[in-house]
Length: 341
Image (cartoon, rainbow, N blue to C red; front, top):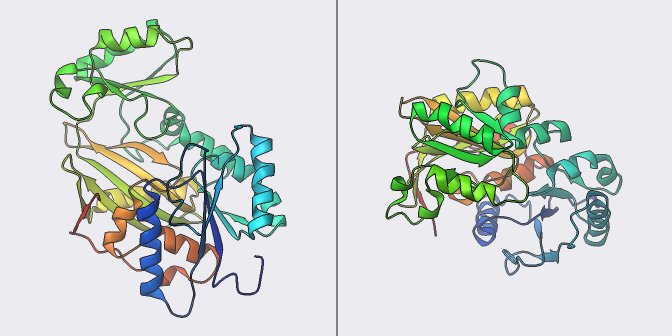
């Protein structure tokens, strides 16, 4: 830490920006006002790629990130930012493994890095197929899947899994829904996201046109509903989780879903997770709940979970800077609706 009062007024840097940045920052400021207790306000720093400016008007410090995407250069730039702005806590949205590998270097200049796990574990989690394979058997339901790297394997996987119903594809490593396709064009009729739905032939043609075939997972399509768990962990202990059940209307129900919370506790323990992360589940036609993925960052909709009375980014900072203990974190209220702005 940079000064004697930094626990009360830490400088917190969100690297790689924040999804829904104005709303997340507003949620943090509301939590600060509600919890006051003479703790003061955190100074919020946000950095983005040059073409992104989310949160620029709401944060205290904004820095454009360098154009290069090379690890060593980016870490050197980040160390300079820490020195220049007196950063106490770094919360990356991108480059989590880079920062995990450089923890000691940041610690030497007074900054703590808040990522959910060590670099090796982060790399495993971020590859969905690797994560599925790494989890203990019977710990959580995962969908059947094939990993394919060429059109022949794609055809074989589709032929196998189509016996179970509609098939979908997604990159093994990716963010949000980029590259996700449902191979049933009829399901997309009249939907705002209709371009996600296509025939197998269309998907095959799209893949054939690529210069480099992406590593893909081919899986049965799970129709939902989808549930997103915003999680705060500490050294393998799940401190708090807010369960958001998503709907096509944009409303999200804040649920008391004990099955998912129990799985989240086990995942947190087995993977030794800390800080902010997000776990996604989808319900299948058989009524079973399936793990979709673990996002090693706070979700874009984390501000919606603040409607439960718990702003997880705020409490993550409080725990990391030592101005709160586990018992201070409140229990989330359930049963309410959170609406996208």
